[in-house]
Length: 494
Ligand SMILES: *[C@@H]1O[C@H](CO)[C@@H](O)[C@H](O)[C@H]1NC(C)=O
Ligand SMILES: *[C@@H]1O[C@H](CO)[C@@H](O)[C@H](O)[C@H]1NC(C)=O
Ligand SMILES: *[C@@H]1O[C@H](CO)[C@@H](O)[C@H](O)[C@H]1NC(C)=O
Ligand SMILES: *[C@@H]1O[C@H](CO)[C@@H](O)[C@H](O)[C@H]1NC(C)=O
Image (cartoon, rainbow, N blue to C red; front, side):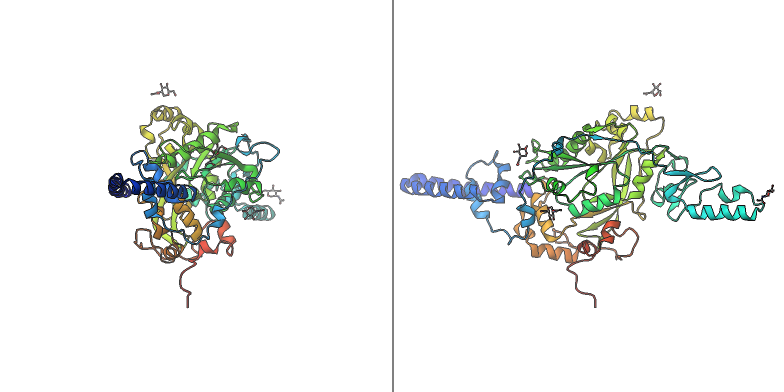
């Protein structure tokens, strides 16, 4: 819609300018004057950082005449910029002495920590899900009394803590209540799978901290891809790289493999979906190629920056055999913060084994996110090789959230930045409308939960104390992340 509207407008403009041009031929001196004027204003426009001029480039193949006319009539000043922090951040820190950040390799290691313990009676229990002290107490009492209660009655089963299920107490509630067909047949692993979590980052740094804190102890390596182009195709500073180098992520730096996308894909200007997909393709291909020691049963999880899987679900994938793939994740959906919760869940296919990633999806993470795996050429062969039916399943269900999808969860300046860097294909592209970029307008959307098209959806009520309201790290740092937890512009409660 946006595209045809724009091109109609362009044609009108071209027509207008054409008339001007005819006039110019009749009056030579006027033409001379006009030309001089045109070239000065063209120069001015080229040197000013006008968004519109750049956005016009995509039409330049078809409507390559008279860009000045169009630019002049569309030009309007930027909002007084509070987005300085986002845009002016251009210092390039040097690579550290140990080598270039985006060329490093990452060695995956086996973890021999005993995640399962054998009780005195020889039962294997998942340490984290088991009420170990109650085991000990019972056993102790049993021995002291030396009564005749059969041992099996007391300790033949693991005693699960709340939220854990199954004979080994290693199945979290979000898997227990999922549609995993082989739920009762899963078995604990001696050595856990390694987990690789891939994500593209733009400026979602608060959510990135939340991801790292949620998942760092179950994920072996985070592949984080940053580009020096926005999804729209404009240059952008490498903010994440700078934050790694200035120490902001030191607490998890040893688990980050930095992926640098230094080019914009062909066709990405005309069709933004190409740019969008390419980010995931590059992330998974470049990132996976730099892992050493990858095994077929390692787990690959790909997310958008605003999709954070809950730790327990990933923990299960890591420690159990017998689940099928691909694996989806039911995520709690919210807009602008966790307070505008939306109905239902977002269920995204996000995980599979490394074997499936390469044999079915050809190493391309974007193909995993699509739901068409069964038509892919390698699928039947791969399914046969696993000797099971690969029926997709999802962690969680519509009432048991297994993660969070927090959409447009930024302060107003961040939303502004997302608007102007959005890809060119998801129409209407709200960043193209000056009035939608106004900080005051954005604040109003946040206040009401409204959307850029003027609609205000229905939201179910939320409560800060509800289960899975937000990732733990966000809740634990309430003051710092208050803007994500409470509507910052809502009227004060009486
Ligand atoms: C416990 O009872 C068994 C017989 O049931 C007996 O052989 C054993 O000596 C008793 N142990 C103690 C510590 O009383
Ligand atoms: C992105 O980085 C590459 C490699 O350093 C460089 O050649 C290219 O000019 C950069 N592009 C922009 C827009 O900064
Ligand atoms: C790193 O840089 C960011 C952005 O300039 C700044 O906000 C942050 O405080 C810096 N962190 C450290 C540890 O210097
Ligand atoms: C399936 O796998 C078995 C061995 O595991 C093999 O003999 C058979 O040819 C395979 N079938 C197909 C259709 O690939």
